[in-house]
Image (tube, rainbow, N blue to C red; front, side, top):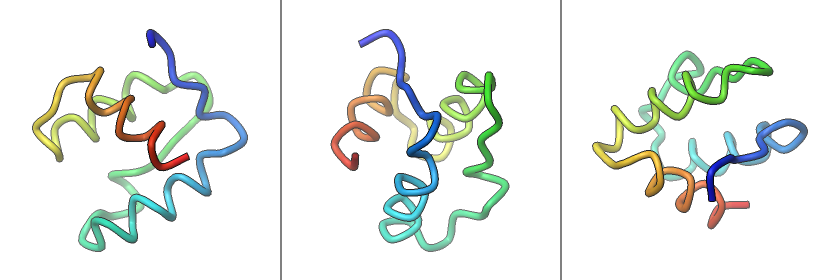
Length: 62
């Protein structure tokens, strides 16, 4: 998958991420419309995974 549609469901996904990674801050998970790449980059950095792995992981949460 090339894109991850976060609009409209990010709050639910963010809650699930915070359940798994309680030490992550709101700044780590800040999402603004049109800033998908920036968010994915922050998550990639935290997890040490590729963009594709992060997208697969987020999809599995949804």
